[in-house]
Length: 156
Image 1 (tube, rainbow, N blue to C red):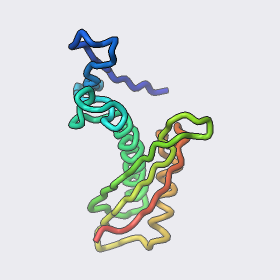
Image 2 (image 1 turned 180 degrees about the vertical axis):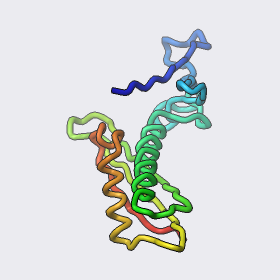
Image 3 (image 1 turned 60 degrees about the horizontal axis):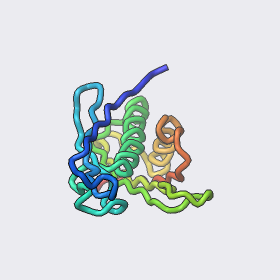
């Protein structure tokens, strides 16, 4: 069993807390020492009480899923003898009401573009199979109820 930790810190900077007029800016500090500036999404809590420059939990959720998928993809491609030169994914999450009427990120779409070494590049079918295998192994994807769509393509 593995454990993962993050220290989430926030402090009040106003006398208007009970009026819901306080900064949602806070920080996430991870076990390796990296600190990330975080905030609520300005689409949920308007500025100035949110900080659009900071990472919000919804963005982090989408990035976490995409990152996990990519790391499995790279591992599987390497074990198949493929050399990946680059990988980029313009991932997107959509928040709507779920079947219970609660707001949730219900749809996540990965749009990975991958470039391979010219010595050996997979076919489109093999590329799709690699992404399916990566999706099946991603523990973050296995932990959520969101519908995840993958639209793989080659980088031009």
